[in-house]
Each structure stands twice: as C-alpha cells, then as structure tokens.
Length: 168
Image (cartoon, rainbow, N blue to C red; front, side, top):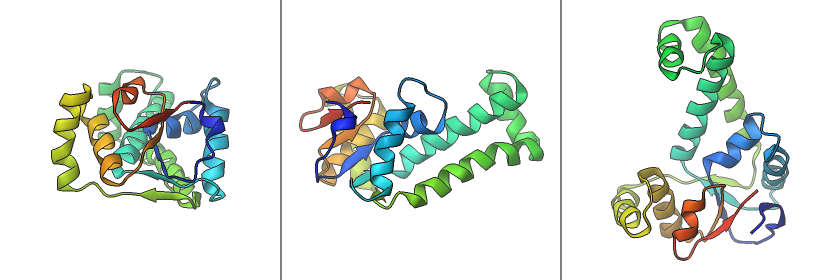
C-alpha cells in the first residue's frame, strides 16, 4: 500500500528508513517521507516509534555527517575519529540534535518504551517470521501496543501476520 494514501485513524509505526528518507538526501523517497511526517506534525496522523528506531536513525545520520566532513565512507575511521576528536564529534552531533528537535515538532508521534516482555516476544517473532532482531523487536512492540500498520521500505514486515505495510 502507498504511504501517501495512508488516512487511517489507527496509529502507524514509523520505521527508521522513513526518518532517514526525510533526514538524508533521498531523491526517490524524500518528498513522500516529508509529506507523511508533515501530517504527523499537524496531528492528522497518529504515529508511534521506539527509542531503538530513533537510535538507528541517530547513528546513521551521525556517521553520514562524519563521512561528509572526513571525506571517507570507512565506518571504522569515522567512528574512531568521532570518539577522539571533540570538534568533529560536536559537528556530527549537531545533526542528531537537529533531528531530535524535529521529533518534538511531530505532535502526532508517540515514542513507545520497549520493555522486557517486548524483548522476550521478539525472539519468538524473529523465528516465526524470519526477522532480524531489531525488526523482530519492532514487530513485538507493535503487537503488544495493538499497532497494525507500519511505514517502512522493509519488505520483511510483509511476512508478519496482522501487519499492513505502507511504503513510500
């Protein structure tokens, strides 16, 4: 189903790639992600995500910024440089802080905590639906919070019974 057509009153879970399509230059999906997130900002759509998703996004935009500054795509070099160079770290974390400020503007977004039960159930869901651990945890949180819709480009969620996948 097309994300641009989502008008459901039920909450929708936002996967990391939607935030990344908005935050990083993505000529194919950036505008769709921006329009979708604007509806959440205006509280026209109720959405949810987890700290795990936000951590994934923060890490990727941090590394992306480091890559631009250092002129390399070597993650090991970028990570080691961020850990050792306070000026570089500050520059890279600036984009994370900007992303965090943006999140506060999303009036329709709820950040759901992950609990021990979510984590335990994730292993079962991972085995049953052939998901990697972070996706299994997302699916578990969705199930435990009665969220049946997900905004993502990840095809793996199509295997999860009871979840409707909305793609940009």
